[in-house]
Image 1 (cartoon, rainbow, N blue to C red):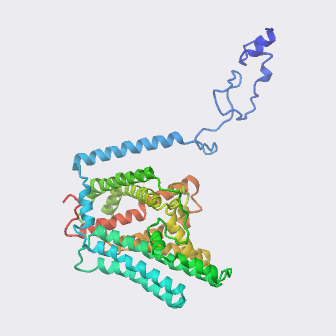
Image 2 (image 1 turned 180 degrees about the horizontal axis):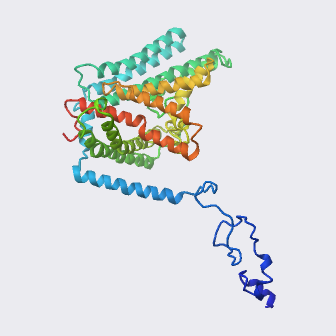
Image 3 (image 1 turned 180 degrees about the vertical axis):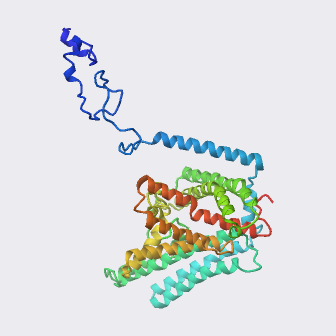
Length: 466
Protein backbone atom coordinates (compact mmCIF):
# COMPACT_ATOMS: atom_id res chain seq x y z
CA UNK A 1 0.00 0.00 0.00
CA UNK A 2 1.39 3.40 -1.00
CA UNK A 3 1.90 6.26 1.47
CA UNK A 4 -0.91 8.26 -0.24
CA UNK A 5 -3.37 5.42 0.31
CA UNK A 6 -2.32 5.10 3.98
CA UNK A 7 -2.81 8.84 4.52
CA UNK A 8 -6.26 8.75 2.88
CA UNK A 9 -7.37 6.11 5.39
CA UNK A 10 -6.39 8.23 8.42
CA UNK A 11 -9.05 10.37 10.15
CA UNK A 12 -9.21 14.02 9.15
CA UNK A 13 -7.99 15.41 12.51
CA UNK A 14 -5.24 17.74 11.36
CA UNK A 15 -2.27 15.75 12.75
CA UNK A 16 -2.85 12.50 10.82
CA UNK A 17 -0.66 11.90 7.77
CA UNK A 18 1.78 14.64 6.79
CA UNK A 19 0.78 17.15 9.48
CA UNK A 20 -2.73 17.56 8.08
CA UNK A 21 -1.66 19.79 5.23
CA UNK A 22 -3.15 17.61 2.52
CA UNK A 23 -6.40 16.89 4.40
CA UNK A 24 -7.26 20.37 5.62
CA UNK A 25 -8.87 21.34 2.31
CA UNK A 26 -11.33 18.41 2.58
CA UNK A 27 -12.61 19.52 6.01
CA UNK A 28 -16.00 21.28 6.05
CA UNK A 29 -15.58 25.05 6.16
CA UNK A 30 -16.37 27.09 9.29
CA UNK A 31 -18.91 29.21 7.47
CA UNK A 32 -21.52 29.21 10.23
CA UNK A 33 -23.76 26.71 8.41
CA UNK A 34 -25.71 24.03 10.27
CA UNK A 35 -25.07 21.28 7.79
CA UNK A 36 -24.43 18.66 10.46
CA UNK A 37 -27.18 18.21 13.03
CA UNK A 38 -25.37 15.47 14.95
CA UNK A 39 -22.58 16.89 17.18
CA UNK A 40 -20.67 13.57 17.17
CA UNK A 41 -20.66 12.90 13.45
CA UNK A 42 -17.53 13.64 11.44
CA UNK A 43 -15.66 15.53 14.23
CA UNK A 44 -13.13 18.18 13.29
CA UNK A 45 -10.49 19.38 15.74
CA UNK A 46 -10.01 22.68 13.93
CA UNK A 47 -13.70 23.55 13.48
CA UNK A 48 -16.01 21.95 16.06
CA UNK A 49 -18.51 24.81 16.49
CA UNK A 50 -21.27 25.89 14.13
CA UNK A 51 -24.17 28.32 14.44
CA UNK A 52 -27.09 26.31 15.83
CA UNK A 53 -30.21 26.90 17.90
CA UNK A 54 -31.00 25.09 21.14
CA UNK A 55 -32.97 21.93 20.61
CA UNK A 56 -36.14 23.12 22.38
CA UNK A 57 -36.11 26.69 21.06
CA UNK A 58 -38.97 27.83 18.84
CA UNK A 59 -36.64 28.46 15.88
CA UNK A 60 -35.44 24.86 15.95
CA UNK A 61 -38.97 23.44 15.40
CA UNK A 62 -38.07 20.19 17.06
CA UNK A 63 -41.10 17.87 16.78
CA UNK A 64 -39.93 14.49 18.11
CA UNK A 65 -41.48 14.29 21.59
CA UNK A 66 -41.75 10.53 22.00
CA UNK A 67 -39.61 10.47 25.12
CA UNK A 68 -41.58 13.31 26.73
CA UNK A 69 -44.81 11.45 25.99
CA UNK A 70 -43.43 8.30 27.63
CA UNK A 71 -42.38 10.31 30.68
CA UNK A 72 -45.88 11.83 30.90
CA UNK A 73 -47.52 8.40 30.78
CA UNK A 74 -45.20 7.01 33.46
CA UNK A 75 -45.85 10.04 35.68
CA UNK A 76 -49.62 9.72 35.25
CA UNK A 77 -49.52 6.00 36.06
CA UNK A 78 -47.51 6.59 39.23
CA UNK A 79 -49.72 9.50 40.31
CA UNK A 80 -52.97 7.61 39.85
CA UNK A 81 -51.49 4.48 41.40
CA UNK A 82 -51.00 6.57 44.54
CA UNK A 83 -54.64 7.72 44.36
CA UNK A 84 -55.89 4.15 43.93
CA UNK A 85 -53.77 2.96 46.86
CA UNK A 86 -54.97 5.80 49.08
CA UNK A 87 -58.58 5.06 48.12
CA UNK A 88 -58.18 1.35 48.88
CA UNK A 89 -56.55 2.02 52.27
CA UNK A 90 -59.31 4.45 53.23
CA UNK A 91 -62.39 2.58 51.98
CA UNK A 92 -61.33 -1.00 51.36
CA UNK A 93 -62.63 -3.07 48.43
CA UNK A 94 -66.10 -1.84 47.46
CA UNK A 95 -66.72 -3.36 44.02
CA UNK A 96 -69.85 -5.53 43.82
CA UNK A 97 -71.37 -6.10 40.37
CA UNK A 98 -74.41 -7.93 41.73
CA UNK A 99 -75.74 -4.78 43.39
CA UNK A 100 -75.71 -2.93 40.09
CA UNK A 101 -77.43 -5.77 38.23
CA UNK A 102 -80.11 -6.02 40.92
CA UNK A 103 -80.61 -2.26 40.76
CA UNK A 104 -81.04 -2.26 36.96
CA UNK A 105 -83.19 -5.41 36.89
CA UNK A 106 -85.40 -4.16 39.77
CA UNK A 107 -85.93 -7.66 41.08
CA UNK A 108 -88.62 -8.99 38.70
CA UNK A 109 -89.57 -9.11 35.04
CA UNK A 110 -92.74 -7.05 35.52
CA UNK A 111 -90.84 -3.84 36.27
CA UNK A 112 -91.74 -0.64 34.37
CA UNK A 113 -88.45 -0.59 32.44
CA UNK A 114 -88.99 -4.14 31.15
CA UNK A 115 -92.54 -3.31 30.07
CA UNK A 116 -91.28 -0.15 28.39
CA UNK A 117 -88.66 -2.03 26.40
CA UNK A 118 -91.15 -4.71 25.34
CA UNK A 119 -93.73 -2.07 24.46
CA UNK A 120 -91.33 -0.39 22.05
CA UNK A 121 -92.10 -3.15 19.55
CA UNK A 122 -95.57 -1.66 19.08
CA UNK A 123 -94.11 1.56 17.66
CA UNK A 124 -91.77 -0.34 15.33
CA UNK A 125 -94.61 -2.45 13.92
CA UNK A 126 -96.79 0.66 13.58
CA UNK A 127 -94.08 2.34 11.46
CA UNK A 128 -93.92 -0.74 9.21
CA UNK A 129 -97.72 -0.81 8.79
CA UNK A 130 -97.78 2.87 7.82
CA UNK A 131 -95.02 2.32 5.26
CA UNK A 132 -96.82 -0.66 3.71
CA UNK A 133 -100.09 1.21 3.42
CA UNK A 134 -98.34 4.15 1.80
CA UNK A 135 -96.52 1.86 -0.60
CA UNK A 136 -99.83 0.32 -1.69
CA UNK A 137 -101.41 3.74 -2.14
CA UNK A 138 -104.03 3.28 0.59
CA UNK A 139 -102.75 6.30 2.53
CA UNK A 140 -101.71 9.61 1.03
CA UNK A 141 -98.15 10.85 1.61
CA UNK A 142 -99.43 13.70 3.76
CA UNK A 143 -101.51 11.39 5.97
CA UNK A 144 -98.66 8.91 6.22
CA UNK A 145 -96.29 11.64 7.31
CA UNK A 146 -98.75 12.77 10.00
CA UNK A 147 -99.04 9.17 11.26
CA UNK A 148 -95.26 8.88 11.46
CA UNK A 149 -94.99 12.17 13.36
CA UNK A 150 -97.64 10.99 15.82
CA UNK A 151 -95.77 7.72 16.28
CA UNK A 152 -92.51 9.55 17.01
CA UNK A 153 -94.21 11.93 19.45
CA UNK A 154 -95.61 8.96 21.38
CA UNK A 155 -92.14 7.39 21.47
CA UNK A 156 -90.81 10.56 23.09
CA UNK A 157 -93.71 11.00 25.54
CA UNK A 158 -94.25 7.44 26.78
CA UNK A 159 -90.94 6.99 28.66
CA UNK A 160 -91.28 10.52 30.06
CA UNK A 161 -94.77 9.73 31.37
CA UNK A 162 -93.61 6.50 33.02
CA UNK A 163 -90.44 7.97 34.54
CA UNK A 164 -92.09 11.16 35.84
CA UNK A 165 -95.13 9.39 37.28
CA UNK A 166 -95.22 10.23 41.02
CA UNK A 167 -95.70 6.67 42.29
CA UNK A 168 -93.51 4.96 39.68
CA UNK A 169 -91.38 1.98 40.71
CA UNK A 170 -88.83 2.38 37.96
CA UNK A 171 -85.21 2.60 39.09
CA UNK A 172 -82.68 5.14 37.89
CA UNK A 173 -80.76 2.47 35.97
CA UNK A 174 -83.92 1.10 34.39
CA UNK A 175 -85.06 4.61 33.46
CA UNK A 176 -81.69 5.43 31.87
CA UNK A 177 -81.76 2.19 29.87
CA UNK A 178 -85.37 2.70 28.74
CA UNK A 179 -84.90 6.34 27.73
CA UNK A 180 -81.74 5.46 25.78
CA UNK A 181 -83.50 2.64 23.92
CA UNK A 182 -86.49 4.83 23.07
CA UNK A 183 -84.23 7.65 21.86
CA UNK A 184 -82.34 5.29 19.56
CA UNK A 185 -85.64 3.79 18.37
CA UNK A 186 -87.01 7.25 17.51
CA UNK A 187 -83.92 8.13 15.49
CA UNK A 188 -83.99 4.81 13.66
CA UNK A 189 -87.70 5.01 12.81
CA UNK A 190 -87.30 8.60 11.60
CA UNK A 191 -84.55 7.43 9.26
CA UNK A 192 -86.72 4.45 8.24
CA UNK A 193 -89.69 6.55 7.16
CA UNK A 194 -87.56 9.28 5.53
CA UNK A 195 -85.51 6.82 3.48
CA UNK A 196 -88.58 4.91 2.34
CA UNK A 197 -90.15 8.21 1.29
CA UNK A 198 -87.07 8.88 -0.84
CA UNK A 199 -87.40 5.41 -2.37
CA UNK A 200 -91.04 6.10 -3.29
CA UNK A 201 -90.12 9.44 -4.84
CA UNK A 202 -87.39 7.72 -6.85
CA UNK A 203 -89.82 5.05 -7.98
CA UNK A 204 -92.71 7.37 -8.84
CA UNK A 205 -90.63 10.04 -10.54
CA UNK A 206 -90.89 12.51 -7.65
CA UNK A 207 -88.47 15.34 -6.76
CA UNK A 208 -84.87 14.43 -7.41
CA UNK A 209 -85.73 11.06 -8.98
CA UNK A 210 -84.68 9.59 -12.29
CA UNK A 211 -88.12 8.23 -13.23
CA UNK A 212 -87.35 4.53 -13.39
CA UNK A 213 -90.92 3.35 -13.85
CA UNK A 214 -93.41 1.27 -11.90
CA UNK A 215 -92.09 -2.26 -12.59
CA UNK A 216 -88.81 -1.58 -10.77
CA UNK A 217 -90.84 0.10 -8.02
CA UNK A 218 -92.74 -3.16 -7.47
CA UNK A 219 -89.40 -4.87 -6.83
CA UNK A 220 -88.18 -2.24 -4.38
CA UNK A 221 -91.34 -2.66 -2.27
CA UNK A 222 -90.19 -6.17 -1.26
CA UNK A 223 -87.92 -4.72 1.42
CA UNK A 224 -90.88 -3.63 3.58
CA UNK A 225 -90.85 -6.75 5.72
CA UNK A 226 -90.71 -7.44 9.43
CA UNK A 227 -87.34 -9.16 9.09
CA UNK A 228 -85.80 -6.23 7.22
CA UNK A 229 -87.12 -3.75 9.82
CA UNK A 230 -85.83 -5.70 12.82
CA UNK A 231 -82.46 -6.28 11.18
CA UNK A 232 -82.16 -2.50 10.90
CA UNK A 233 -83.36 -1.96 14.48
CA UNK A 234 -80.74 -4.39 15.82
CA UNK A 235 -77.94 -3.31 13.47
CA UNK A 236 -75.28 -0.91 14.84
CA UNK A 237 -76.40 2.04 12.72
CA UNK A 238 -78.93 4.85 12.87
CA UNK A 239 -79.37 5.30 9.09
CA UNK A 240 -81.60 2.99 7.07
CA UNK A 241 -81.03 1.61 3.59
CA UNK A 242 -82.44 -1.36 1.73
CA UNK A 243 -79.29 -3.42 1.37
CA UNK A 244 -76.63 -3.22 4.07
CA UNK A 245 -73.10 -4.49 3.38
CA UNK A 246 -72.64 -7.99 4.80
CA UNK A 247 -69.58 -10.00 5.79
CA UNK A 248 -69.21 -13.56 4.44
CA UNK A 249 -69.57 -15.36 7.79
CA UNK A 250 -69.65 -14.97 11.56
CA UNK A 251 -66.25 -15.32 13.23
CA UNK A 252 -66.80 -17.15 16.50
CA UNK A 253 -63.40 -16.23 17.94
CA UNK A 254 -64.09 -12.56 17.24
CA UNK A 255 -67.43 -12.80 19.04
CA UNK A 256 -65.81 -14.35 22.12
CA UNK A 257 -63.08 -11.70 22.08
CA UNK A 258 -65.60 -8.85 22.07
CA UNK A 259 -67.74 -10.60 24.67
CA UNK A 260 -64.73 -10.91 26.96
CA UNK A 261 -63.94 -7.22 26.41
CA UNK A 262 -67.52 -6.30 27.34
CA UNK A 263 -67.38 -8.33 30.56
CA UNK A 264 -64.02 -6.86 31.63
CA UNK A 265 -64.97 -3.29 30.76
CA UNK A 266 -68.32 -3.59 32.54
CA UNK A 267 -66.54 -4.73 35.69
CA UNK A 268 -64.08 -1.84 35.27
CA UNK A 269 -66.96 0.64 34.96
CA UNK A 270 -68.57 -0.71 38.11
CA UNK A 271 -65.21 -0.52 39.90
CA UNK A 272 -64.67 3.13 38.95
CA UNK A 273 -68.16 4.08 40.11
CA UNK A 274 -68.22 2.10 43.35
CA UNK A 275 -64.59 2.47 44.37
CA UNK A 276 -63.82 6.01 43.24
CA UNK A 277 -66.89 8.12 42.44
CA UNK A 278 -69.31 6.92 45.13
CA UNK A 279 -67.01 7.89 48.06
CA UNK A 280 -66.69 11.40 46.59
CA UNK A 281 -70.48 11.66 46.44
CA UNK A 282 -70.80 10.53 50.04
CA UNK A 283 -68.39 13.16 51.32
CA UNK A 284 -70.78 15.83 50.06
CA UNK A 285 -73.74 17.03 52.12
CA UNK A 286 -75.35 19.39 49.63
CA UNK A 287 -76.11 19.59 45.92
CA UNK A 288 -74.05 21.56 43.42
CA UNK A 289 -76.75 24.19 43.12
CA UNK A 290 -76.49 24.95 46.86
CA UNK A 291 -72.69 24.81 47.20
CA UNK A 292 -70.56 27.92 47.48
CA UNK A 293 -68.06 28.59 44.71
CA UNK A 294 -64.95 27.17 46.38
CA UNK A 295 -66.68 23.95 47.46
CA UNK A 296 -68.10 23.51 43.98
CA UNK A 297 -64.68 23.91 42.35
CA UNK A 298 -63.08 21.53 44.85
CA UNK A 299 -65.73 18.88 44.23
CA UNK A 300 -65.44 19.22 40.45
CA UNK A 301 -61.66 18.87 40.58
CA UNK A 302 -62.07 15.66 42.61
CA UNK A 303 -64.46 14.27 40.00
CA UNK A 304 -62.42 15.18 36.91
CA UNK A 305 -60.07 12.17 36.89
CA UNK A 306 -62.55 9.36 37.74
CA UNK A 307 -65.19 10.85 35.46
CA UNK A 308 -62.71 11.03 32.58
CA UNK A 309 -61.62 7.41 33.03
CA UNK A 310 -65.28 6.43 33.26
CA UNK A 311 -66.10 8.17 29.97
CA UNK A 312 -63.13 6.66 28.14
CA UNK A 313 -64.03 3.17 29.38
CA UNK A 314 -67.68 3.71 28.46
CA UNK A 315 -66.68 4.87 24.98
CA UNK A 316 -64.58 1.75 24.37
CA UNK A 317 -67.33 -0.49 25.75
CA UNK A 318 -70.16 1.00 23.71
CA UNK A 319 -68.52 2.30 20.53
CA UNK A 320 -66.00 -0.49 20.03
CA UNK A 321 -66.72 -3.73 21.87
CA UNK A 322 -70.53 -3.84 21.94
CA UNK A 323 -71.08 -2.39 18.45
CA UNK A 324 -68.50 -4.74 16.94
CA UNK A 325 -70.13 -7.64 18.77
CA UNK A 326 -73.53 -6.70 17.36
CA UNK A 327 -72.08 -6.15 13.88
CA UNK A 328 -70.34 -9.52 13.87
CA UNK A 329 -73.46 -11.32 15.08
CA UNK A 330 -75.54 -9.73 12.30
CA UNK A 331 -72.71 -9.87 9.72
CA UNK A 332 -72.99 -6.11 9.37
CA UNK A 333 -70.18 -4.91 7.13
CA UNK A 334 -69.77 -1.20 7.93
CA UNK A 335 -67.69 -1.20 11.13
CA UNK A 336 -66.61 2.45 11.09
CA UNK A 337 -68.22 3.49 14.37
CA UNK A 338 -65.73 6.22 15.28
CA UNK A 339 -62.77 8.11 13.88
CA UNK A 340 -59.48 9.15 15.45
CA UNK A 341 -61.15 11.82 17.59
CA UNK A 342 -58.24 11.73 20.05
CA UNK A 343 -56.10 13.42 17.36
CA UNK A 344 -58.67 16.14 16.61
CA UNK A 345 -57.12 19.61 16.60
CA UNK A 346 -60.48 21.38 16.93
CA UNK A 347 -63.86 20.65 18.46
CA UNK A 348 -65.64 20.50 15.10
CA UNK A 349 -63.44 17.61 14.04
CA UNK A 350 -64.01 15.91 17.39
CA UNK A 351 -67.81 16.13 17.08
CA UNK A 352 -67.59 14.65 13.59
CA UNK A 353 -65.41 11.70 14.61
CA UNK A 354 -66.35 10.66 18.14
CA UNK A 355 -69.57 8.93 16.99
CA UNK A 356 -69.77 8.27 13.26
CA UNK A 357 -73.33 6.77 13.33
CA UNK A 358 -74.68 9.82 15.16
CA UNK A 359 -72.83 12.25 12.88
CA UNK A 360 -74.02 10.38 9.79
CA UNK A 361 -77.64 10.53 10.98
CA UNK A 362 -77.38 14.22 11.82
CA UNK A 363 -75.80 15.04 8.46
CA UNK A 364 -78.21 12.89 6.46
CA UNK A 365 -81.51 13.76 8.15
CA UNK A 366 -80.92 17.24 9.60
CA UNK A 367 -78.12 19.12 7.85
CA UNK A 368 -78.68 18.00 4.23
CA UNK A 369 -82.49 18.55 4.18
CA UNK A 370 -82.01 22.02 5.66
CA UNK A 371 -79.39 22.93 3.06
CA UNK A 372 -81.69 21.66 0.29
CA UNK A 373 -84.32 24.05 1.61
CA UNK A 374 -81.82 26.88 1.09
CA UNK A 375 -80.94 27.29 4.73
CA UNK A 376 -77.36 28.66 4.97
CA UNK A 377 -74.81 25.98 5.75
CA UNK A 378 -73.67 27.64 9.00
CA UNK A 379 -77.24 27.89 10.25
CA UNK A 380 -77.92 24.27 9.27
CA UNK A 381 -74.86 23.15 11.22
CA UNK A 382 -75.99 25.18 14.23
CA UNK A 383 -79.50 23.67 14.16
CA UNK A 384 -78.12 20.13 13.87
CA UNK A 385 -75.75 20.77 16.77
CA UNK A 386 -78.47 22.24 18.99
CA UNK A 387 -80.73 19.26 18.29
CA UNK A 388 -77.89 16.90 19.28
CA UNK A 389 -77.30 18.90 22.48
CA UNK A 390 -81.00 18.77 23.30
CA UNK A 391 -81.09 14.99 22.82
CA UNK A 392 -78.09 14.56 25.15
CA UNK A 393 -79.80 16.71 27.80
CA UNK A 394 -83.00 14.67 27.41
CA UNK A 395 -81.23 11.32 27.80
CA UNK A 396 -79.36 12.43 30.95
CA UNK A 397 -81.95 14.63 32.67
CA UNK A 398 -85.15 12.59 32.21
CA UNK A 399 -84.03 9.38 34.00
CA UNK A 400 -82.84 11.50 36.95
CA UNK A 401 -86.13 13.45 37.02
CA UNK A 402 -84.41 16.81 36.87
CA UNK A 403 -83.64 19.41 34.23
CA UNK A 404 -81.00 22.04 34.85
CA UNK A 405 -79.72 22.31 31.26
CA UNK A 406 -76.11 21.86 32.38
CA UNK A 407 -75.24 19.39 29.63
CA UNK A 408 -76.97 21.51 26.98
CA UNK A 409 -75.35 24.75 28.14
CA UNK A 410 -71.88 23.22 28.33
CA UNK A 411 -72.24 21.91 24.79
CA UNK A 412 -73.26 25.40 23.68
CA UNK A 413 -70.25 26.77 25.58
CA UNK A 414 -68.03 24.34 23.67
CA UNK A 415 -69.54 25.69 20.47
CA UNK A 416 -68.56 29.21 21.51
CA UNK A 417 -65.05 28.00 22.35
CA UNK A 418 -64.79 26.40 18.91
CA UNK A 419 -65.89 29.63 17.20
CA UNK A 420 -63.75 32.01 19.27
CA UNK A 421 -60.57 29.99 19.76
CA UNK A 422 -60.74 27.69 16.73
CA UNK A 423 -58.43 29.90 14.66
CA UNK A 424 -56.09 30.74 17.52
CA UNK A 425 -55.36 27.16 18.58
CA UNK A 426 -54.17 24.73 15.93
CA UNK A 427 -52.11 21.57 15.83
CA UNK A 428 -51.02 20.32 19.26
CA UNK A 429 -52.46 23.39 21.01
CA UNK A 430 -55.83 22.74 19.39
CA UNK A 431 -55.67 19.09 20.42
CA UNK A 432 -54.90 20.17 23.98
CA UNK A 433 -57.97 22.43 23.93
CA UNK A 434 -60.11 19.50 22.78
CA UNK A 435 -58.88 17.34 25.65
CA UNK A 436 -59.47 20.17 28.11
CA UNK A 437 -63.07 20.46 26.93
CA UNK A 438 -63.48 16.70 27.33
CA UNK A 439 -62.21 16.88 30.90
CA UNK A 440 -64.35 19.87 31.94
CA UNK A 441 -67.25 19.62 29.50
CA UNK A 442 -70.59 17.78 29.21
CA UNK A 443 -69.37 14.44 30.71
CA UNK A 444 -68.52 16.21 33.95
CA UNK A 445 -71.90 17.99 33.87
CA UNK A 446 -73.64 14.62 33.51
CA UNK A 447 -71.77 13.38 36.59
CA UNK A 448 -72.97 16.38 38.58
CA UNK A 449 -76.54 15.39 37.64
CA UNK A 450 -75.97 11.99 39.25
CA UNK A 451 -74.34 13.67 42.25
CA UNK A 452 -77.37 15.87 42.89
CA UNK A 453 -79.70 12.94 42.33
CA UNK A 454 -77.83 11.02 45.01
CA UNK A 455 -77.92 13.96 47.43
CA UNK A 456 -81.65 14.67 46.98
CA UNK A 457 -82.71 11.02 47.04
CA UNK A 458 -83.74 10.02 50.54
CA UNK A 459 -82.93 6.34 49.97
CA UNK A 460 -79.38 5.94 48.61
CA UNK A 461 -79.02 3.57 45.64
CA UNK A 462 -77.51 0.10 46.21
CA UNK A 463 -74.20 0.94 44.54
CA UNK A 464 -73.25 3.32 47.36
CA UNK A 465 -71.68 2.55 50.73
CA UNK A 466 -74.60 3.58 52.93
